[in-house]
Image (tube, helix red, strand yellow):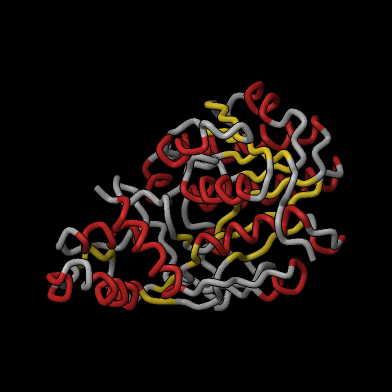
Length: 328
């Protein structure tokens, strides 16, 4: 089974974002021509600055809410890896309109552009948030619940749109439900920073992070290289039963926020000895947050050959080294 995209022309929307930049980096190493489409609302130019002189890389600074930009970006492309979205549950609670415009309107624009260009394979980022108020563990693809945030709703609508376009127009779509992805290039700053980079930054500075709620909520933390691999095998699969559906992309193990904090504190003590004495602060729960999350990856293993290589602890060691070398 082929698991590396090579000698293709690939569009990565949101390619200057955390996950997108990791995908772009990998694809360039594998002799592909890569187009990055990003509006830099959440993506960062420093994530892709080292690619700008690469003749196989092209940056389109534009917005997926612009139909003409989308149409131009997909020109002569073999594969679309759609990562562009306005992330963060709290951000969507605060500003549901912009989240909807980008995540649903922009997604539809990209689907139409890909369809009109005749692109056969459209892989897109969905989210574990679609499981909503379904408390079953592990999360299984065919059992979702009611969305608990505008962000979660947008991802659910993406999946419906992808299914309709597959049925009506013949474009092959695969949705990847990411579970709490972390790794290099993930921004530790700002009000909507994810928990792992935010905790790493604060602990390196000798400061105590704030844990929302009691810290006993659990997440299936997924190192970004597992996600990059999932995008590639989804783009390449020739299994007819594997397309026009969705998959969990995770490691398949859940960890509480309190456990995560203790692991990070242990690993970071060697970089800042004062870290060992730091105790977390506890704040209010975030509205729209899911209490527990853990994925079954059985479907992806069976149909795509998904084989995640990095556990939480293995990924944290790599991520910490990157942050230590790159945080100023």
